[in-house]
Each structure stands twice: as C-alpha cells, then as structure tokens.
Image (cartoon, rainbow, N blue to C red; front, side, top):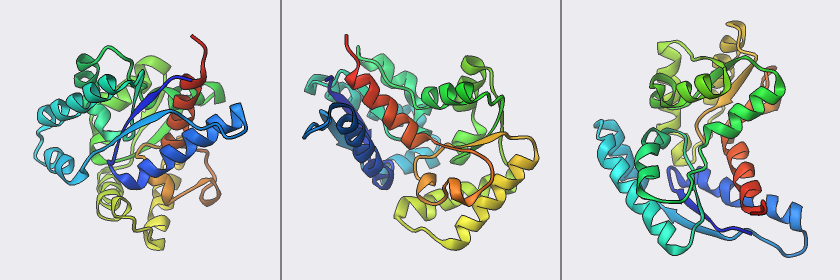
Length: 232
C-alpha cells in the first residue's frame, strides 16, 4: 500500500469524510484490520479564505506548495488536495513536488463518461463555477459540456458554502434552495449535476432530487484509495 498525503482543512468539515471514505475503501479491499497509510496536513482555512477573497491566489499557491513539499519529505507518494476550489492553484503545487497530485476533477469526469453523460451541471464556490480551471479540465479532457447556474443562483450557492456549510451548519431552507437550483440546471439540459464543493454533499444527496448527483468528495477519496492500493 502506498502512502497518501492529504492537504485538508478547507474546510475540516469535508476533510472528515475523506479520511473515513479512504479508510473504508482500504478495509473493503483488504479486509481485517487494514486501514490506509495517510499523512494529513490540516490547514487553517480562515487564512486561505482571506487570500481567496482578496484575489491573492499566488500567495495561496505558494503556501499550499510548501505544504505539499513537506508531505513529500514526510513520505507521501501522492497528494490529495481535499477541496475543489483550491485546485485553482494545482499548477503551483505540482511544480513544487516530484510526486503526483491526484486531481479532483478527473474521477468525476471519468464517472460521467462511463455513465454516458455529455451535459453536466456544476455547483461549487463562485471561483469553481465562474473560473475556467475546473470547467476547462472537464471540457478538454472528457469532452463534457458544463453548465452553471445563473448569477443570482451562483451567488446564493457560494454564500451557503462559506457562511453555513464550512461552519458545520446544515439548514433545511438552504437544502431546499439547493434542490431548486439543481432542478433548474436539469431543466436547462443537465443530465447530471456535480457537487463541485466538498461540503455540498453534507447538505444534499441523491434522494433529494431527480437528477443524478456526483459527489466529488466521495469520488475523489475512492480514487485516491484505488491509487494507494494499486500495484506498481
């Protein structure tokens, strides 16, 4: 089994499922008392969020690159960045280490291709929905058409993430609002919807809507476990 280095804490609410899912996946495969070999660096998200809000992505990238380097020195053989939004600085992380970064968008894209989906809705922070670092990867690597909510819905979705989900608040009114946004995306042609923020799966699930949902936390963590267990 290969050792994974996790960069988490953004937020820690969604880092918890990463730890659980990766360990569950290892136990399912190996049985007995087996668990994953992990090194976790949990970041103070308040500092990172301030860098996001002030558009200081270069500084955020430098900070996560330093953390990635520490994880490599500690013995990690691959990196798992436990957040969608901070993949905006994936190039800075990748340039700082010699080990692979297991990109969060890839297992989602692979699952969509396997499912025959060509048009997919994307929910996430405003950065994930509006910038091209995430959508472009899905479009160029997997041939997907990615649609996002309108401006008002994007603002509301992002607000709930930062002001509620990252603080551990799961409100019924917000769940209903997310369901309505998902239904509007489906009405616009989305055959499935990506929960493109690792906290969203804490609020809405498959039983809440009539369109398939892809939880990036689950797909990313399962893919990371498969990588760790693969031979070679």
